[in-house]
Length: 225
Image (cartoon, rainbow, N blue to C red; front, side):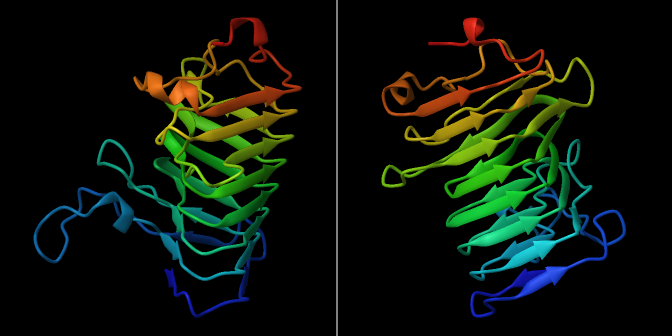
């Protein structure tokens, strides 16, 4: 599904997330018309270019992830998108908030590797972030002029199994910003918390923080400085 930039102020509302499901089985290993493999950015079940778009009570899914390849559930390129009571179910690269400012309320997001990523300002409130495999939760590429990146408030981090160990974030750009506020951590989090992704230069300008974390994974004494 593609929502073009000119289609503003539209709401897509389902009966319930468990009953209204939009799915597309496409990954980056699928052949494009030119015979080459698709780029990951061309795999989303939903591509949202419009501003002021609202999605409620829906499941968006892309089951074509690993071992086949990267498979996005949604790519958001507009501004001021609002997600309420939605499920975003994928594997590698589930949610790309590429640019703009967006709000996620009471949503569930499942995936692996870098499954929440992009340069947008994204606020996640009362959301469940579920790691299917070991990897990284948000991988922000916040531009240097943006005051905020990914913010998780009163969320829950869970894992498919105790072996699904995840970092709280790593920087796709040096200026990446990720903050966790009053988040329940299940114990699937790596004790050190954060990873500079072999980019020591990022430590000078990245901003990673957590405040009021609870649960078995809340371990401030073990976090990297």
